[in-house]
Image 1 (tube, rainbow, N blue to C red):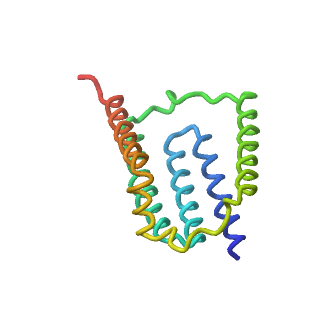
Image 2 (cartoon, rainbow, N blue to C red):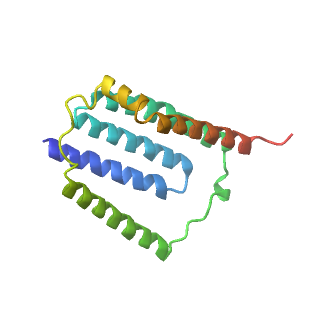
Image 3 (spheres, helix red, strand yellow):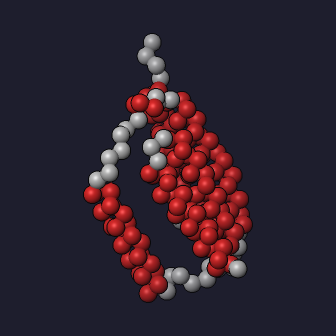
Length: 162
């Protein structure tokens, strides 16, 4: 049952991610992002990382996507001002290159033996906290500054001139 659920959640996550970047309307992209984040939370549950699944739903699908929706609604781009999508050969080439990259990454992981079972406490609160505030502290802080800069930039662009 677990492999079937993994395939279902994985397909939903990949399909949702593709829909996020291919939709013309930003609100539709935000809704597909929520779908993708819930599917990733389902994958975390399958790996027995319940804390990470809860954080995925609460922080990302809850707070961050609400922030994105707020910024999208604040900017309020009219429908006729959205960019026009053109089907080109570069889009097809991008899909082919992305597929080859995913295939190559899977082969590297398989040959290096990195696809083993996780440690017993890999999804626990203590393990996540220790990794976040030791090994990944710089990335954590840079991400928070990047999100703050994005919100300030969106507000500055949306602000009406007086």
